[in-house]
Image 1 (cartoon, rainbow, N blue to C red):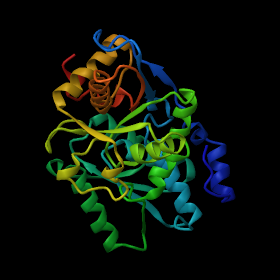
Image 2: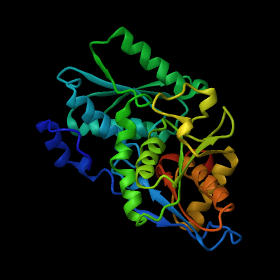
Image 3: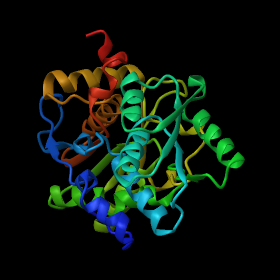
Image 4: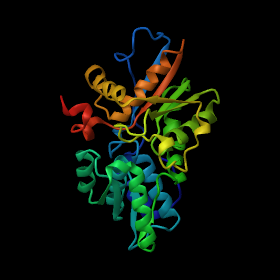
Length: 315
């Protein structure tokens, strides 16, 4: 667990709660979904972030942003934490808020999966649903307007522009991957939502070895069905994301992401979310180009939150 300070009460609650289980997720080698024409000297590993207590990679930045805000004295009696989300960060913030006794309000597109909506409500957070055609951008604009009207009420964590987001991965995810591969990693692949995972993890890996390639994954088109990922050019660009840092970006079509998601469950026994399928598709495209290498791809969450969505609903 990374350390942001020594605010006694908050840190005691983290240590003595489920929040102490955030991070240290497993790395598993993928074999059955690897095409036979890919070089046997290329290894592909998945970082299974569904093993976080809130079920996704977003537990890391949610906890980091909460503790950072507490350390700065922003979260105090009577304040409400608020943010925009596509789902997973909302779940994570609701979980952290429940553990720390801090009320949470969230804005999210109305078309996110029903499972995500119910999980957030189960944690006790208040949710505002925004125009699905506006995606997460609509949720962001909603939160900005609400905060501007009641600035004394809210603590806006702003995951898209909060450096505590990417720092969570710099101090946890990147270190874990380096240790789990014994420093053998050559390529890191991750989808882009806020940009926090790829920026923080990538920066840490570059500290260890500048030759490690950092590859981002985006949807191929502005209107897509891959929950959790952003088509950056057509969206409000996250302030914490710097595209120039990446060695490469691979664009994935929705259909390919869905098909790979289904294959993961049937061939590897990994029930995964849509963005996992997208990231794996990109990783395999990359693997086809290599003679040898160790590719680590982040699987942001599990498939339990998507059973009523396109990849699974027709099963």
